[in-house]
Each structure stands twice: as structure tokens, then as C-alpha cells.
Image 1 (cartoon, one colour):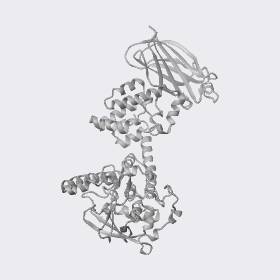
Image 2 (cartoon, helix red, strand yellow):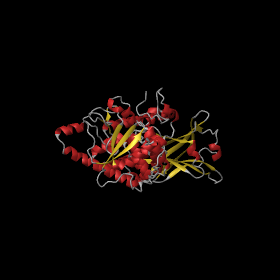
Image 3 (cartoon, rainbow, N blue to C red):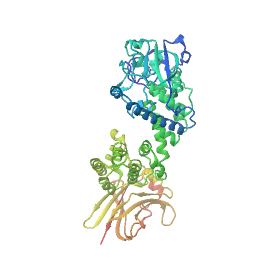
Image 4 (cartoon, helix red, strand yellow):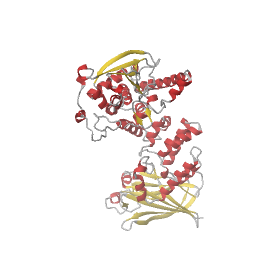
Length: 561
């Protein structure tokens, strides 16, 4: 049995025990048999109808991806208008018939040249036609003879001699057409109807099914063939086009275009390398998300999704990413209900709430752009995650169901996340935990520094900063830890502070330095050589301060009246 969508010439297709004679050598070159009556059992008649007025072929004459996309968009808009006019002019019976044909913006019927591939077998009493629109969970030919073809004027008819065995092995469309078991499938002549703009791509596709090669080489021409391969369900050609497009230098425009292809292509396994490459390009291009903030805010939905999916965004914190997402949503969806819909269904799952600060999570609960039930759910999940042990947090991050949207995976934040425990009595106090990976510490040498996210005490913001600096005498590098107050307001605070770190062999926290300081905005205090060792000794493989590759730091702050 052949699985739906299987391509007998595609080595990646999943097959049952059935093996076709032609499958044993999927890369055979049958180009000698193309359009040769001596090696053919059928005639494919291609009716070429007029294209849409004032719209060129997507690939015809297009010198750039931008022009190709513009032509395609104009063609889709015109077809949508024509369909609306056509329905208005129909009788009630005709309108009822039209409504039985699936036609949504998410199907190939709209996006891919606005029609599904349709075939008619000549010679039958009723001129039976086959409707290849999706019906339910399966796609296949229908014997319903009441469905009519496009009534556009036929410009010309091109006849091509074909081998039904070769086409059925390469294309699910022709497999269903030739092997559906009904009487008409045995007829010699088969007619399909295409727009003039599709002719060149279809001929290249037919040739590919014989030779496994394409004459198209420009990106615009390959995109036309890709759309044709999708329409006629030739998985191996979709994969081949995707591979060639990946080898062409990508730009922001081309990456966004690849992510805006018909949903049937985006969901196809054969085109996955192309969509993955487009997403990777955008995520790398906008890695420093705030350096390109204005560009990011102008990205379409598919673009912002690709950027937010990255683990390597160089953002200050997840709080700032959350604010950027809301700003993007307000820019592109000014209507509240539409904004709520796109946030809930497509963007919010890309925000990593467990790495947001508790102060920002409180604001999430009161955000008008999110459904209250959803906001409560993500905040509760984030708080439970923060309360877990590091081992359990890691287990959640690599868990397969969670890995889909990676909401438990920590990004490469500029400001490192902290855990904070607050106390009000007998004094205002907070205990702050900061974990740094060995690789992060190694990157600090020779003069680097890394900052924590802000935390609050007595209504004032503070932060920790870890440094690689010279010791007091300037003779060697060492690890330093400092406490600073944000530059907000003119208030001053007298704070007792104490630094500690987990150390072997007990792996418990050991106090390293304590002091008191009256802070004013922008000031910082700390210790240049927290561990009283050279940098090399601090970083060595058997260092007492890295436990399973993590440096665990703790700071206790107390305000005394």
C-alpha cells in the first residue's frame, strides 16, 4: 500500500512493504522518454487560459524577489475581488454549489494561484471531472460530475505525451487520477487547465518528474516551480526546489517571502529545510533585537515569530521582550479584539514568562491585551518554575512537550536572571541568588563584566555585577562581585550587605565578604577579589567554586533604621 503523499522517487518518503520497480533506483534519468509517444501511454492536454488582467506571471520578467512577491500579492488580491464579484452575479443555486467547494485563505485554493489542480478525462459520456480540493481528512479525486471547471477563455492547448507510471510514481495528484479505479481513469487523454502564468513552471515540473532536474535556476523561477510542485503534489520536486533556494544568498525580503508561502508548503516536510533556513536567517539578523528595534517592529507576523523563537536573542531581559511584543501588537493590530486574538494564538507562547521578574509578572495579570484566564495561567506556571530546584528546571526545559515552544529555556540575556526572597520583619531584607555558568565566567576575561536583572528593596532598584578585574595592587586578574543601586530618585539608603558562594566539599554557601554602605543613585560597592585567588586558580577544572559547571552566588541586603 502507498501512503498518502508518498513519492516513489523520493527516498525520504515513508513506505509500507510495497516496492515499485522504479523505486529501486529513484535517481534514474528518464528524460529520453519525456513527450515521446514511443514511451508513453497517455496524452496530457494542457488547456492554457488567460491570466489575470494587468498581472504578470509571478516569475516572468521579475528581476528580484521583491517584484515576484509584489506580483503574487497583486494576483491574489485580484482573484479575491473577482471571486466576490462572481458570487454576487450567481443565482441562488449556483451560489449554493460554490459554497460546497472549500475555499479559504489557508488553503492552496486561494494562495497557490487560487485554484487547485483540476483534471478532466476525455472520452467519458459525462466528461467527468476530478476535484482535488481537500475534503475532510483526505484528498482525492471525486466522481461528482456537477463541479465545473474554470470558464476562462482557453488561449491554446498544449499536448504532451506522458507515461502514467512515471507521473503516478512522482505525483500524488496523478497517482490519484490514474489509479483511482473508476472507469474514466483508464481513458487515454487527460486534460488539465492552468493559467498562462503557470505554463513554464508546469513544463519544468513535468520534465523534473522524468529527469530529476530543473532548468530553472533563478529564485523567482524556482518559486514558481515550487508552487506548481505543491499544487500537483510532487514532494521530491518541492524538496529539490527548497534545497536550491537554500543555496541562493538569502536576504530579509526573501526570508520573509519564504515564510509567507502557502500554508500547504509551510507545513510540508519536503519544504522544511527552506522554512528552517529562513527562520534561522531572521533570528541571526535580528539577534541584537534592540539594535534593530525599529526594523523588528515593522516585521510581519511570520517574521516576529521567527525572531522570538530564538534562544540567542541579545535582550536585556525577558521583561523587555514582553514589552516589545506588546508594542509590536499595538502597531500591527490597533483593534483590541484582533490584538488579543493574535497574541493568544501565536505570540504569547513565544514569551518565556518563567524568566520574567516578579514585578513584571504582576503587570501581566492586569494587562488588558491578554485574556485574564490565560494571564493567570502563565503567571502561575512561571512562579512554580521559579520555585523549582535547578535540576528540576533543567528537566522541564528539555522535556519534549515543553521543547516545542521552549518557554522554559533561558535565553542569552544581557542581564542575568536572579531569584529573590523578600522579608519585611524584623527589618526590610532581601536574599538574592545569582547563578553563572562556567562559560559565562570564562568570557569575562580579561576585563568583562555581567549584570544581574534588577531587584528591589525598600522601593529602590538594585543589581549585582560580576567582574574580571585586577586585584587592589594591579598585579593579577581575579573575580570580583559588586552591588549597585539604580539611578532613580535622590533617596539614599544605608544597607548592610553580605556576599556568599557555594563551595566544595560541602557545596553549601560560605560567607565571603560583608560590609555596609550608604547608597545613592548610580553608586556601587563590592570586593575586587571575592575568592582571594588568581583568575587562573578560580577557573581551573577542579575549582572549589563551580558545582556541575555553575557558580552559585548569594547576596543578603538589609536596611537598618
